[in-house]
Image (cartoon, rainbow, N blue to C red; front, side, top):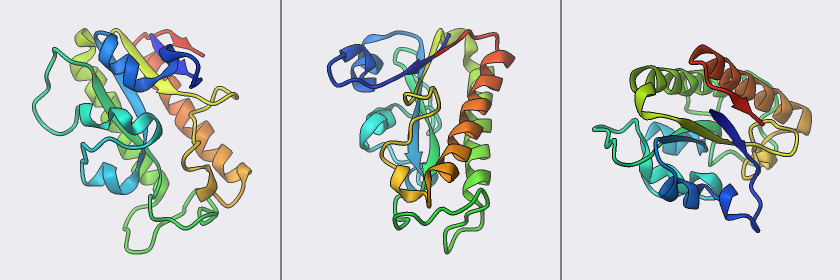
Length: 171
């Protein structure tokens, strides 16, 4: 099952930190910043990036624990309201944010393909509109319509992966 989690501070079952420690055979897809994603950081982050220490793309996989993989949804250092279009590229970068997102989605796809027998549930963070949440990064986008383009694109890619591997997509 591919399950959307809408965080609610009053419901422990929407807390990625609680879930990753208490659910079995699960993959947690969390919102990542580009810098931590590229550096393969395992330091706990804010929001759902609290599961970053469980990254599955940093070496040997421990099948006795859950896994996490990040999707970069913005640059940590980007100034507020800087991301103005789908082809946004940060200074000193060689890839657009969309290209980086595509690489991370492809990594998730490959990880599931190679480890499906160990994954019963895939959790991802959704907002009230059933799109990938951007709460910590929303102010990086020039306006809400640009943020919506990225949210819709990522959510549709997650749906494609769910279909490809016959996971039920639950909102």
